[in-house]
Length: 265
Image: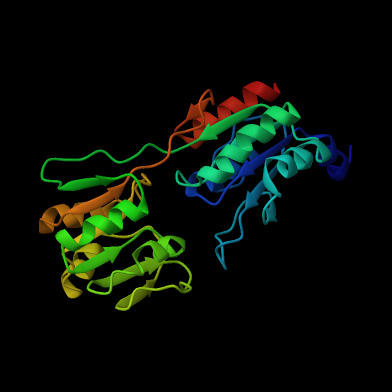
């Protein structure tokens, strides 16, 4: 059988991606040399869907589509049209809308759904974490905590802080932010993972006195929390939204790969 025919006949997997875990899962399922996949594993047709919010996303093994689906109905239509066998929601822990659409679409299209979600961070001795339910609540807390803010919640959440004219912000993000912006803002364009020594230097050089972060979890951006602990800085940590009720969830790409293989025989 020719390779093209093998690909056409292969079971189809759609990964809602954009995270390190999604890239690793795609590698595991496609047999990418950078990842280990089981000997003799059945070939799969793996497509990763990216939202398109990052101008230069990291390389993803397998096929890639970019852009939205048009809501839950549009995603369900895509699943049916592309004869998708399983759907993996491996989006960012704060991508609540797309996760909700995925759960609805999987139900409408009768496609098995698995959520791959890395665990949130756990506080260590010496941490001064201040939980917030939202970016808006985090912004309300800041004037009482400090004047120089290291903001690591992403460029799309910046409008929640735009009205705080009395504070200075250091924003770290992958792509340049768009208005509305805080009056006093410095931007660092960078992509993790970040080293602890660099985070220490960044906090010291910019005289940061409070850190704001989403509880994204994972090791790539965790060093900022260690640096803040060492410096005795308060951390405003925005709580992540819950996973859609009733959805099966795993924490590691290897677990998700095993689930896919078991579902597809």
